[in-house]
Image 1 (tube, rainbow, N blue to C red):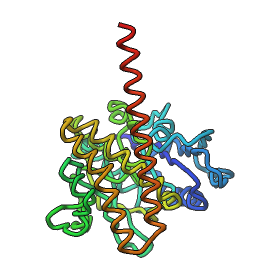
Image 2: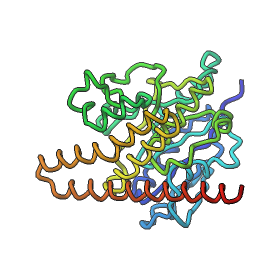
Image 3: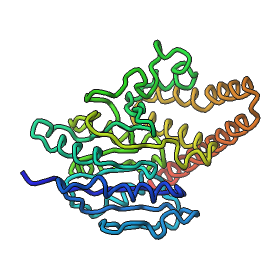
Image 4: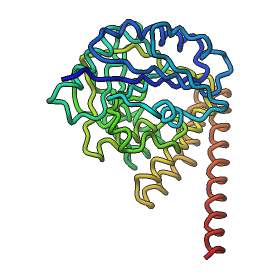
Length: 324
């Protein structure tokens, strides 16, 4: 059986030295047991020069520079264009690979008994080697409502959180979702499902892709026999209000894509009205005016976006009626 071939796709946005460290680490993960065809860095209009003069000596490195921030999903798809590799690895710039990252992972995926696995994640660990909780449950209307109320934080035994925090990730098992920080997918499956849904600018894109893979009859698996360092937070810590906006917006998009109209409406009310009130309450209890301001700013962006969306939908329907 020939070795698997691999393309690695890294989306960068103002990640500073993290991207260079990530690229520097790739060499340590190459042992000749698989064929690395391309390392594609897609830079989403970074302003910090992080994608310039990368240390790609000896690597099949390609850098694509976007004039604007296209978002994570669109940039991932952009990096995958033209790939002929067996597998695609979507890797965050705040990761660092080691000899225990790629070779055992691809060997596991290559085994005939694992031919039904379409998406694979591995253990994400911190500087001390402690495993992060990187696998998650598929969202349901009830789970999203509980998250809006913060019930998954105060009563996790009754309202399990999105990430599987009760499990130490020390064993290999099928899961609903693996995190996009290290997401390995068979390229034919990626092509078959149409790649990432670009309506998700950021967040829920990996949730959606894993769900599409499972709906296509493929398994999503967490492989405990390999690990990669993951810093976490990354560049999203720079823009907390914007991050809140995109989290809530992507939740609404996911609900609209997969839930029934009634459930979608309930999720929308809790996301746009109830959760902001809950977040403001927590901010005031902590006497954090900065946090309260970030909540108000993020929610203001969300309402503006939804009103624009409704207006464009109304205008498009009106144009269709006028043309008929």
